Image 1: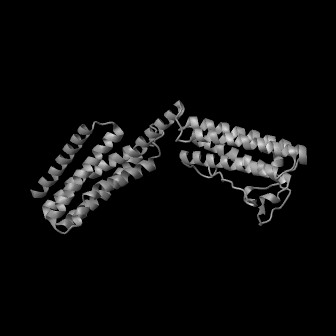
Image 2: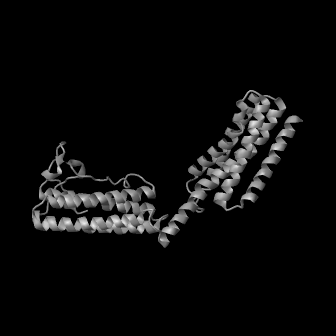
Image 3: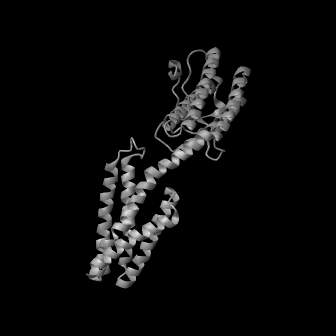
Length: 333
């Protein structure tokens, strides 16, 4: 940023001024500031997306460079008309204009949110330049502002190309595939591991306690303890097993949290029926829940791991049946 653009020559009060009250120098200064904010936002978007969404990152970089070019045009005109000192004025100081505040510089946001924000920013920028052009009688300023309004309208089309709803280019197809792969590696896989462990490994202690004591409450306590213990253990194991830097599996904290919670959920599912006081009713309900859990695991394997549905169901059901039988046999012995 040029040093002169950071120089404040006025102290703006708390009262917001209406857009129509601004002078020509103030309109140009406001436009310069808006272009600077947009360029910074698009640059930050590109940096955040560079590794995972290179095609979208390239388009955001091109948009940032165009905003920088617009800024130079505005500064050159300001210097020619009004001198070297540009007043400090921001959209927050003015009533009557709509400006989307770029949030990409403040914290990471999702790529779909970046795309949506870019579209809103460009729509508002085009509207701003049309409104600004109508507020000045200077032919040179009006001409430049009108040209920039047309340029920002073209940016709206560029933002539409980045949007997920448009026909994908080869780069966008790769981005979508990479995003699906990361979702499977970072969420589905640790979640599936946890769900399988929680659903299957807790079957033996829950049903062993149930058939050993014929007490729903005792079975519930054993299931609750086993589920929470397994969740903590699996969460730490997943988080400590891989830092994600080489494998691309993402932050270990997220994977550990997902794995731990899904482990607890898998165990709690067939434990909750034992809150029913009647032992046999609770046991039948727990058996039904076990079948649902195992079918859910098979569905996830088919949906995300490309496992044939019948093979996935057969393997999961066989494993669950063996563990369930082991628990019952231990309980009745």
